[in-house]
Every structure is written in structure tokens, then in C-alpha cells.
Image (tube, rainbow, N blue to C red):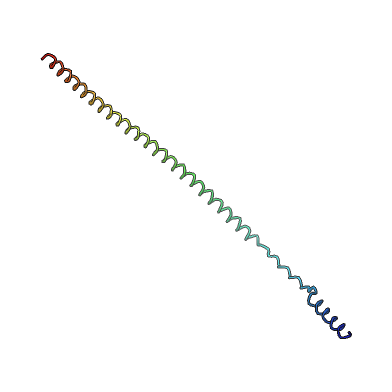
Length: 122
């Protein structure tokens, strides 16, 4: 029994040592890096330059978009005008063809009536 008590005490001591909380030293804080005033001013100048460039690019894009919209509207107007001209020409041509056909039909009817009258006289 004496041996088992010693053995149990050794196992308990080993378990406590293995499971015990091991404290690690806290990491040293990183040294604070101070930005020089010149670097901050340079960054501000770069940001202002970038803003100016973006403003100029946006203005150019708006101008280009307005020009493209004007050109598209002009092209659409020209297409509508051309379509109207083509429709007018087609209508005139159809009217002329119909008039010619009506004239030919009237002549044929007159000829048929004359032939019928001549046949009735005989």
C-alpha cells in the first residue's frame, strides 16, 4: 500500500505539472513610428493631384458623352428623314402605278363597250 500511495502521488504530480498553466512573457510593444511632417505634406499633395486629375477626367468624360449623344440624335434625325423620303417616293410611285392601271382599265372597258355596241348593231 505504501508503494501504491507513492506511485499515485508521482502520477498526480506529473499530471499537475503537465496541465499546469505556463505563463509566457508578454511580447514587447512595437516601437511607435512617427511619420515626419514632410511625408504627410507629400501625401496631401499627391491626394490633391489625384483629385484634380480625377476631376479633369470626369469633365472630359461628360463632354465626350454629350458629344456622342448629340451625334446619335443627329444620326437618328437623318435616318427618320431618309425613311420619310423613301416612304413618300414609294407612295408617289404606287399612286402613279395605280393611275396607270386605272387608265388602262378604263381604256379596256371603253374598248369592250365599243365592241359590244358594234356587235349589237350587226
